[in-house]
Image (cartoon, helix red, strand yellow):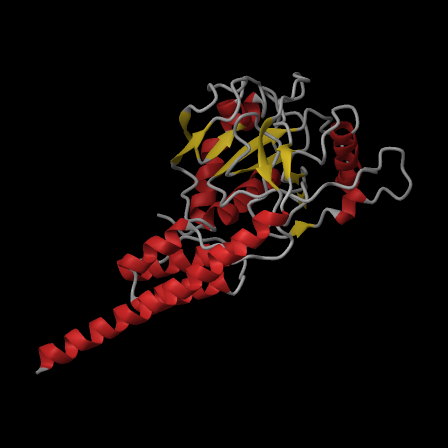
Length: 331
């Protein structure tokens, strides 16, 4: 009798999961079809080749996201239906179907899987990030970014962080950081004719983090920072030049670690691990279509033939990875 009741409960839960999954996926595909009818394809912003290389070839076109948040469950959500407890699976799909931010759904997946495995998810708090409006409005200065960026483009998630330096002077006052970022953005959107600043984030020597490329700091915005590897990555630029022998402020490296810990934690990535990325441009270190195993927290020179982010900052990347992992609560 008890076995029959248990079997009935399991069968009932399976039916509920199947019904909910079917209905939500029906809504999802219907919404995608509607979005596809009105979306516009545009060329991806060229990858940032580094200060010494003016070339910036385009990558394949990608669709501009529909302005409305659509129910787009990531693949792990669907996989979770088969392995997570019934209520957790239903909850995650419901989050996506209701249009909750993708990072929220990713965290729900991570939490549910971690709970099933009896471990805590490895995440880190979001550090303070100064919004781009603080630097983008130049108050009439000559180097104000006059161009209005087009609608941002997105990937499904961020699995790696590329660290850069801006090859600019180091002896600035931190109060001048917004002006310096405006200058960098004006150069990229002016002489280089890019649609927006290439970096997703910028960090000054005092450890202040600034939003760079438009699209939302918590979302997987497709950047233009590492030629061939702009997809599924985020670019963080250290304001200054950090060649061999140049001191790198600890406040700056701590801020980079905090940003990487938070951003990679959204998808459960250990900053000390390696990830698989596919090159989209043969002018990178890898031919187009080649899959490369790269550090989850990498230097620009890991993906492109350049001296960026400078020997001094590159030498500190192992320490930054360890700090980021600790901030995620990893042993």
